[in-house]
Length: 224
Image (cartoon, rainbow, N blue to C red; front, side):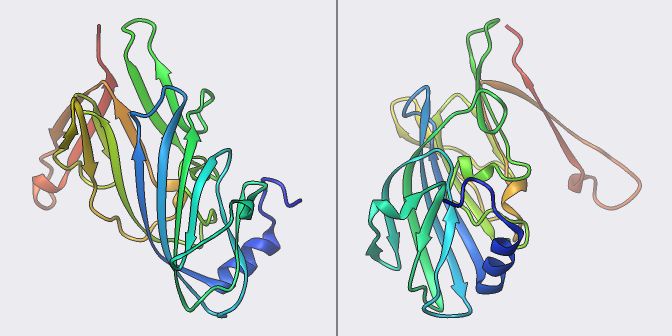
C-alpha cells in the first residue's frame, strides 16, 4: 500500500509523464453539515500514451470516476489515490465525490461561531491538502488553470483566487458562484472562503500606476 504520502520518486515520475492543462471544480456547500459535494474535471496530457499514473483524493466517498469517457470501477480509488491506466496523449478525468469538512484547519475547515451561531468556512491547502477538497495531481510542479463553481446559501460571501462574480440563483435561497479561470498555479495556493462574513474593501491610491489596480480586501467575521 502506498499510503497517503507521495514519494520523491513518484512525484518525479508523474511530472515526467503528465502535463496538466486545467481543473474545473464544482463544490456544493449546501448538502450537509459534515460533508460537501465535490466534482472535479481534470484535463491533462501524457507524454507516454499507454502509461499508468494516479490522481490524489483523501478521505472521500467516490460515486463516479470517468476517464476519457469510459467509466472506471470504484476499486480504482484506494489508499487516497485513483489509479489511472491506458492514458492517452490527451486525457479528461471526471471524479464525483463527497468530501468531509475538517475541524483542524486542513482542507476545507468548517466553523460555527458560538457567539453568533453562523457558519464560516475557509481552506488551508499548504502543502498537500487540496486533495481533501477536490481530485488533484498534488505536487507543485504540475500546475494548471483552475475554474471554481461554488454552490452556497445566497446570503453568504464566497471568495476564491479569481475576482468574485455575481452569484446566480439556482434555488430557494441558494446560488452558484462561477469564478473565472486562474492562470496556471499549483494546487496548494488555490483558496476558498465562504460563509456569513462581513467584507470591507478599499483602494490604495499610491504613486505608481492606476489606483484601481491596488485593491485590498479584508475579510472578517461579522459582529453579532
